Length: 364
Image (tube, rainbow, N blue to C red; front, side):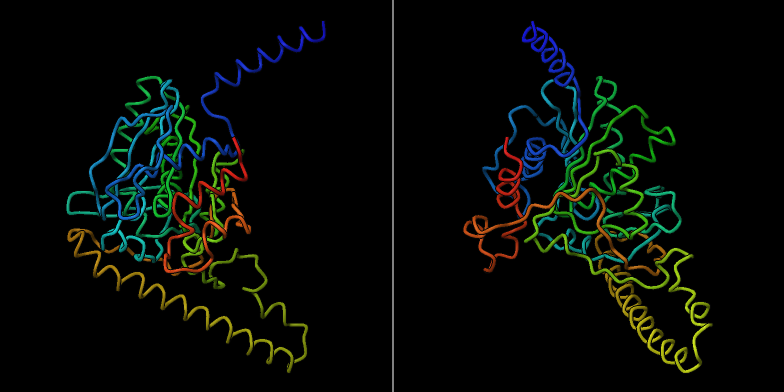
């Protein structure tokens, strides 16, 4: 009798799980499928011919190249219950790399004029302290209209679940895309009953601490992940510079004079002198990064996008990671297959390394 009851319960639960379009939490098999989808890019300078495509998905839409050579693909799971938004990463051409190097920050809510007739209005966070990488925001600005169009089309076909996947630059775009779609749903531009799950694979850092807080909040409960091979250099970028302007207003480092009031004069003078030297050095570094990765790089961006207007940058370079971290830690077996040193700068960044590690730690 106990066995019969167990079999009935197991059958009922299995039916519930099988009927679910998406489940929260990191799923190794699902991630490997998404990684395989994302590397079906034979026009890319870093694509690997022969990367296996998952058998249970098929492509239904491929965008043209837009902006600084961005592109995305839409795939459907064969049961038409899940759609995939797959964002291409960097390709071997100067405009694509310029998008990465255009690394000043702008507000996470505002407008970006990408040509004489198009103003991209966006909300990636409602926190006024949240800032994002302007180059990847420019990529999102060009991709967003076709992404929204395909989401609405899939919705009319009964699809309510979407996975967003991107690797490298595509991972950065996947992060921003998830934020953008969350606030579109909140304002009613896309249906609010859509469930999004996001895998940001090998992604660099896309925004400041307050943007990262917002991303982690809106994807809470197991719906947004950043997958990192600990040997990969790309997720280490961009440089993070934190100044006192990046703190919450209650932070005591902002109010050092008040903290030092009770100290003797000589102690106040020494501490304030040392502190100001440290504070000014990071502030100078931030200004240099903003100048070089903002206005200087924009001079080259303008040659690719001649009608784009230079936005106003915020004085911030406090880049932080966003998403629940899924760390793929290399071991001796990994380094036997993928040497720690060598001429290939992308040895630890591409499909083979990530797929091998994921399959070791999350076996089917």
